[in-house]
Length: 631
Image (cartoon, rainbow, N blue to C red; front, side):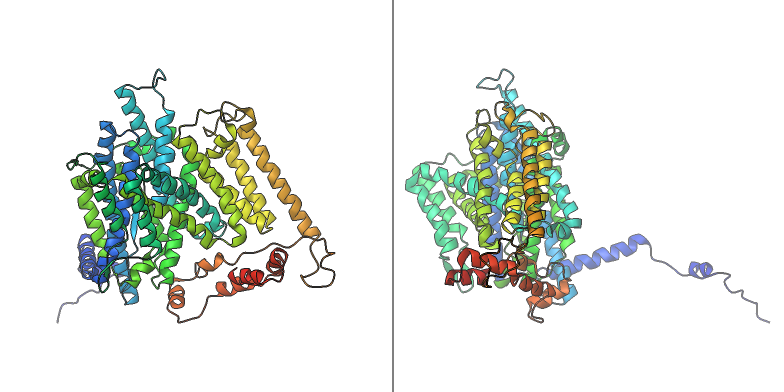
C-alpha cells in the first residue's frame, strides 16, 4: 500500500512550496527593461538637430545672461567668480541634465502608451524668474548689507561677506521656489481656476520690459558703431522671419547671426579683454540653501509671485503641447520641474528651471526625443569642464543683450495676446511697479526720500499681480472677486510683503525715510477701503440691475447697473484643461470638434453683459463688431 501524502493544511503552506523571486531580482529586471526601452526610444533625426540648435542657443543665451548679470555685481572680485564658476554653473549643468533626460524618458513612456511618436518637452533655465531673483534678491541683499563703517569702500573680507550673503539668500529663495512648484503640482489645476491669466503675465512683463529689454540694450547704445546691428538682427531674425537657410529643412538658428556679429564687432572694436582659460569646476553640496532663510523675509514679495508664475508657465506649456497632440501628465511635469529646481538649489544655483514654450514648433520640424537628450549631455559637459568661462570671455555683452531683449519683448507680447483688449489698461498699470523697482535697484535709490515710488518698488511683482487681478475683475464688473483680491492685498500689505522694506515688522513706520503715511497700516487701510467700494457696487448690481437690453425702448432711461462680464477669450486657451488627456488628444487631432468647456465659453460670449459692453463702448460701428468677434 503506497504511503499516504497529507495535503497542505493551509493556503500559506501551499505558497511556501512555490519558489519566489527576490525583490532585488524583480527590481533589477524592471530597471533593465526600462533602460532598454530608454535606449530604444531615443531618436536622432533632422528635426532633432534643428530643435537642438534652437534649444541649445536659447539656454546658452540665458546662461550667459545670468552669468554676466552676476559678474556685474563686482566684476573684479575673485570670490564672486569662484562662486559663479565653481558652484552656480556646475549646478546649472546638473539641473539641465536631470530635466532633459527625465523629459526624454517621459516622452518615451508616453510613446509606448499611445503607440506613436512623442516630442520631448523643451526644458531649460527659468529666464522670467532667474533675472528677478538675480536683480531683485541677489542685488538687493548685496546693496542692503553695508560695510562696518558704512564707508564708500569695503575691505576685501567685508566685500566677500556681502557677496556670500547675497548668494545664500538667493539660493534659499530658489530652494523655496522648488518647494512651491512641487506643492503647486498637487493643487495647480484648482488654483488656476481662481487666478486671472493677466495677473500672472503682467508681473513677468514688468521684468521683461525693464530688466530683460531696457537694461539689456543699454550697453549696445554705449558703442553704437557695433552695438545697434545686433539689436536690429533681433527684428530681422525673430520678427521678419529672415532666417538663413543652409539646405532643405536646415536653417541657421536665429541667435547665431546676433552672436556672430557681436563677437566679431566686439573683438574688432576692442571691447573684449583676454580670453579666459577654462575654470576648474567641481560639484559643491553645502548649506547655502538653508543658511539664507534668516534674511529672506523682505524678498518674499519676489519669491511668491515668480514661484507661482513658474507653475502657471508650466500649465500653459502643457496646454500648448496638448494642443499639438502630445498630452503630457500635468502633476508629474510640475513636480519634476520643482525637483529640478531643488537639485540646483542644493548644489548652489540661485535660479531654477522650467519647461519651455515652443513644443509645437519642435514637433512641426520633426523633432522627437534625441534633441532633449543631447541638450542635457552637452550642458553637463560644458558646465562641469569650466568651458562656460571661456565662452563668456569670447562673447561680449553686446551680443548677449539683444537675445535677452527678444525674451523680454516676447513676455510683454504674451500679455496682449492672452488678455482681452479691455484689460490692456491693467497691463500698462501693472508695468509701473516693475519700472519703479528697476529704477530704485539699478540706480541704488533705496536711500532716496521718495516714499511713493519706493513703496511701489517694494514687492513689485506681487503688488502688480494683485493690482492687475483687481483691475481685471473691476473692468468686468465682477465685484465679489475684485473685493476678495482687495482683501488679499490688505493682508499682504499688513504683513509687509508688499510696499515695505521688511516683512512682518514696523507696522506703523513707513518706507522711504520713515514716512508714516506709507506704513503697512496705512496701506492696509487703503486696500480695505477699496474692498468696501467693491461691496458697494456689488450691492447696487444686485439690487438695481439693468432691466433693458441695448436697443430696447427705454434703454437710455434705464439707470440700473450692468451685470458681470465673464471673459471667454482667455478661458478658451484652457478649454481642455480639466479634461482627460485622451480627450485632449482627440480634440487636438480632430477626432472630435470641441469640448463641453469650449461650448460653455461660446455661451459666455453671448452673455448680454458682453453685448451691452460692446454697444456702450463702440455703438453699432464696424469697429464694435470686430471687437466682438475678437472677444
